Amino acid sequence: MRRLSRKKALNLVKELDAFPKVPESYVETTASGGTVSLIAFTAMALLAFFEFFVYRDTWMKYEYEVDKDFSSKLRINIDITVAMRCQFVGADVLDLAETMVASDGLQYEPVVFDLSPQQRLWQRTLLLIQNRLREEHSLQDVLFKNVMKGAPTALPPREDSPNQPLNACRIHGHLYVNKVAGNFHITVGKAIPHPRGHAHLAALVSHETYNFSHRIDHLSFGEEIPGILNPLDGTEKVCTDHNQMFQYFITIVPTKLQTYKVSADTHQYSVTERERVINHAAGSHGVSGIFMKYDISSLMVKVTEQHMPLWQFLVRLCGIIGGIFSTTGMIHGLVGFFVDVICCRFRLGVYKPKDTSLLDGHINSRTPLLTENGSH
Image (cartoon, rainbow, N blue to C red; front, top):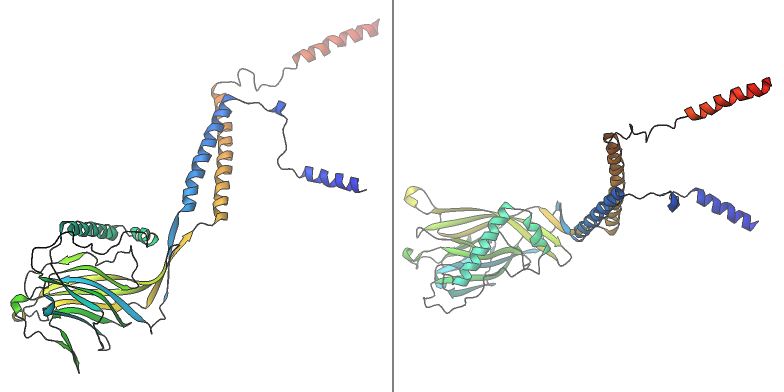
């Protein structure tokens, strides 16, 4: 009984076979079929090879949500060189709540404003990359995916000893400020606290020494990530007048970056620039200096690096192989049919049904013999 049940089950499974085997004696191979098969296998191999590179590639997914973190501090990373001596300039931050942030985290270093040939080459390369980033926004994804691996974006040290006097001041370091709108500025004189805000001791500095030509080697917000370029990195401005104001209006967007190499909380920003000469007689009022007014967006961007799952890669691979196999089979059949039609094989009798006239002749010839035997 068990053997009978096994046979029935085996027969049932055989009836469900979707891939019946055809004896080799019934299969006819042709040169055209072999050529099409070779083309199909080559196309399958090429497409599968390219699909593997698509599977290995990653892309950045952008999501937006409301930033609910208001209690933490915002870090400002600064590296700016001003074409004035360090004793004549001062830098500080005043936020929207009229809170003055101490600039203890900033260092004042006397330097030469002009760059060395190697540094000038670095700056030109950086500006070229910045221009390409403004035109090709998709390059930002490449920077995100290559963080912690790219070359450092800081200005390289001088390769020579300058013979010129130290006529500039490099202000670099970082500050921690409240997550509210504020104003970071560099102007004449050191900052002093004031009951109604703050002031700068600029009375002892001659107007002839004012020169706010500057170079922004680095300006970022949040955690510093090597390999990330910021919009103002490499910016250089040269004054045309002693009393000149440079304004940068910055909008900061909190950003959570999560890739396969790094996970960090940083900030991106966009900037609008404006500069003008201070001339009170012409109605252009203000204070000479460099002013960076920043505001923080209420939206946060989550940038996540994503990868094609393995099951999707296998499904696409099966689709490539099965699709090419079926398509080439249909094309081969249609081409063969049209070739037969064009070559007039119908006229040669290949597709003509067999002639039954001879069989009818034998039948007709036998009929009179039977009648004759019947008559005898």
